Image 1 (tube, helix red, strand yellow):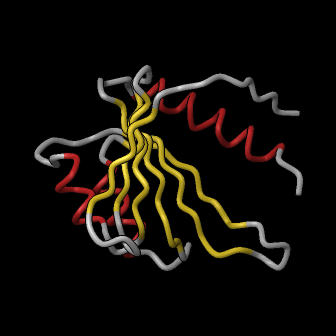
Image 2: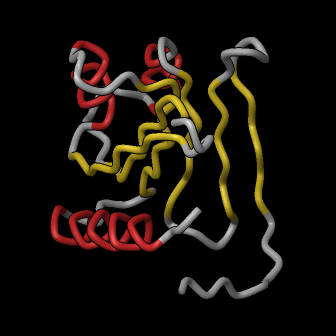
Length: 130
């Protein structure tokens, strides 16, 4: 069972682009991670937003279509270059994703930290029962 602790946090939400296909960023004041909501096909706006002159490491979640139980298919991954990885996923036909949720750190966390976060996210997701 996953325990969720209640607390209040200040989160700044920014919307970039048209409302229906907008890239959104969620920035918790006390977090090292900035979360981006990136609809498929809007990776260019995302790249411009994060300033893709250098690689940006990230933990990311690709959200696909829902199954007959209305549970969306989710792919969880980590990368040292989130823009290139989303472009790669976009070119592959093995997972039809609609939305990417990217957690981009404001400082370098390193491969081991991201792998640990990815592993924890996969373990938590596998425990969710609908």
